[in-house]
Image 1 (cartoon, helix red, strand yellow):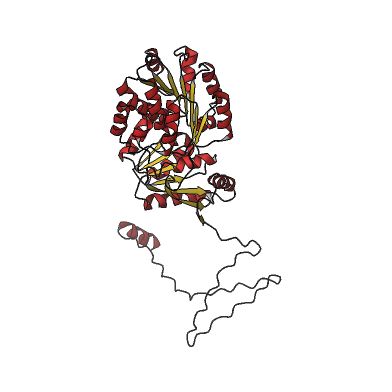
Image 2: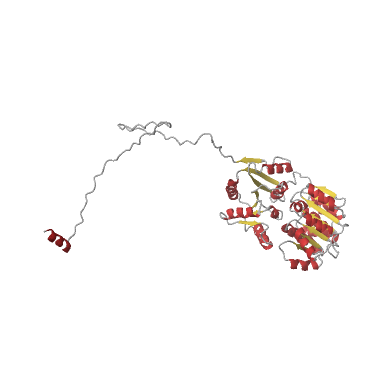
Length: 442
């Protein structure tokens, strides 16, 4: 079994790795770190949670420690991933003298401008925010020697192809390019051909040992029954839950419905500012909130241990997103659960795409919510009334026969016995007025 000592790392780096709590290198780290250390362009495909971030942070910090200047640029698809990547660079780079600046949407432009002007060694940024700084003249990329694409497939799915072209055009052609992705989708391969030179490929095939232990369940049910099913699941699951919805409007709808029943639910989507996002994630991590509702864009930035259950309230638009969603549970050798709500007919194409991507009939358990078909050919009939027992000596009037084509039967009334009318009581007048009336009558 390969150990950290076998990867030609310095004593300082080995000490930092031990302090970070990394036990043994993962397969992607074992194969990637030596290639990055040698200066090759490296194209890596490995599943979520396999240790890809450390696969490029550790060797890049080793290569550039002791140098002055902005030599490293790492691109991330979302703010949360950029912050997490920046934190890992800070943990391994700062003790060795490397400073990191993170540039993301929602943060202060003037503050980032000042940080960029200090010539940091490492820039971690989202493509959109970095292009903003390039247009303002706040940063130059003429001296970048290492370009890193983290979650390349996600960046392309989010429509950052144009920004990536703008950025790569301003970076020297003679550089090291590292590209890390969960899948080798065709557009990822196309990008790799355009920005990399003879890359070394690393593909980590899923093994029984490395595959997360996630029990997956698929529920077919109509739209109107989703929320009640979610309520039951949230009640039955005592652990932490992440619920993925297809849009920010949908996220708010789910949160509002759950929040009316529970006080331990929070949410995160792209309309929240950076401070609100960080607060929601921090409170979810700390246990203040047990349930988090999120969109796909936010999903890849959620790095929380011990998530018990992932719920796909909506089937993801891309099959790859399913892998990333359920990858939030069953991390670091622990088991987890994933439940997907699918609408019959409408979501079948998306489910088939997920099954094709995984190469198996997935999820394994299929449960169908079926409704009794309506019998439109026959009008609903009124329930027949059970015959009442006859009382001895009592005869019941026979019901008149009724025909749909004949005349209507006569209406038979059962009259109640008359009640004698109450006697009319005359109002008597007395006193002086009565004496006057009697006087005139006389």
